[in-house]
Length: 483
Ligand code: 5GP
Ligand code: MN
Ligand code: MN
Image 1: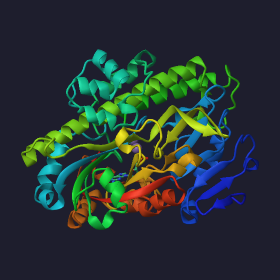
Image 2: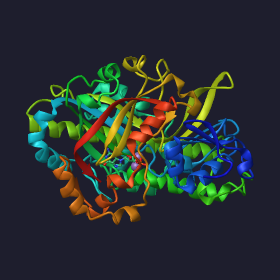
Image 3: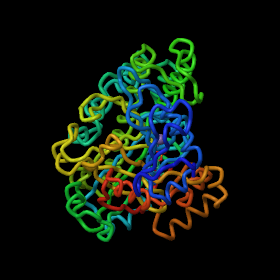
Image 4: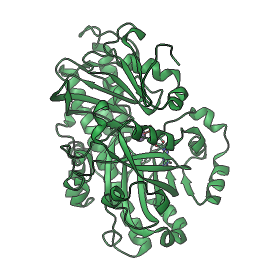
């Protein structure tokens, strides 16, 4: 551990501004001692680079699932002054609006288990996955521009959404201010046939069970729709695919060319390129990034439509009769303007969350009525072997601008993880343990072994001890489509 790392509390660690020249604020890591000790050196280096970005407010943060990323650590959170601060694509990530969606059913484990192979196989064929896969929504490039500006609203108009789905999505599935004219032709070309695709790597669609012994907060679980023993839910994770990647790539390049020359911004790390938020380049990126955010919301929405069709055909009931309502959809790679209390005063900040989930507490503006008193559902993936969590935002989340973890976070590189064993063997082992997984890539599967990730129980416990998000239920996998 860096010698100047100071323990603030059992779950909060600080690197002072003296750690590195140029730091404008201290850097803070939310983690237990065990988790902070397991973090790679990249985290300390990167979170303190973030602390050098002009306009940063209070602290640069890293969440307990933090690990090395591009520019920012994954798990990085930074709030900027929207007048005098910068926006940095590295603080959002290449997979803009990568996020998690949780959907309920009124089916139980006993009812689903006999059909699990057919169910997972059908999902595998109906929800395209893998590198470069194309989606089932056939839209022209002109229509794609509408998707970019309207997000889930486009899906509602085109029969892919229930009105309630939008309410149960962060920002109702559309960041206002998206402008498709700020997006390159190349990005449109890469993206317009990818609406309705999971993608590859750690993107997944998982069938999960909420066992009675894994309900941690009964009353919150009930409020979030987990009302029956061994209830089946579906959690899926994907983002803006090649489209978001191209938007990020385009603007990283543009920022690199103007940051020093035009704006006199110091380049600490090429990966941390940025532009003043109020500059034309900064505003253009913001409007283009919102297009990718909306594309990802639409992507998850049409995938939900497909999942409902599959369940409906296998269980011979309508999705409505199967109670296939959304718990919530929440992003973990975004930048947005939010109101937060800074030095006792409520004001707008530009908040970057990269591998970090918004976790609004009870009573906060921007939550649907049904979650006003409970706080926002927070959806955190663990791994395909170990399980995942549903949590709730807490009133005490102000320290991190109401942000929390987004996963367990990797401890091993993909390369190291591959050495754990072959994908085919892993699939057979998992099947013996009651998890049926389908994938396009055996190599990819091997890289996703549970052992390649931190212990999800420790990560979520740390978020709860730190007062960021409270555990509601632990969800166990029984089926998985891995991208
Ligand atoms: P990201 O790609 O957004 O950084 O990672 C998302 C998180 O999801 C990872 O940190 C990991 O904890 C979790 N995760 C990855 N693959 C799976 C999976 O197949 N199932 C579940 N439940 N979680 C996963
Ligand atoms: Mn992603
Ligand atoms: Mn993600």
